[in-house]
Amino acid sequence: MLDVLIAQGAEDDYTDSLRWYAERSLRAANGFEAEFLKALESIAISPDAHPLCDHQHRYYMLKRYPFQVIYRNLETGQVLIVAVAHASRQPGYWAQR
Image (tube, rainbow, N blue to C red):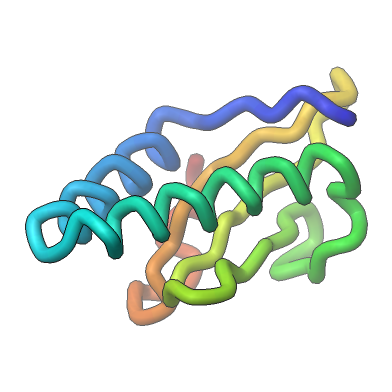
């Protein structure tokens, strides 16, 4: 299992989205959090199992929420989460992270 690091931009994406769900429904927020943790676990266990979205990034699509967890493998043997991107956002907005 690899170490998973979360970039500040991805942390902000996640926090903003979790807050949005929490303002509407605690149940939805808890579900979003559980799906995100499931994504992190899957990425840590098998990072190369998920599809590529460009030459260096892969993504994990959350099952019940319209979000992709965008990440890349680091030379250190760790994984860096660069975005928690809503499916309706401009594709690649996170590319400079």
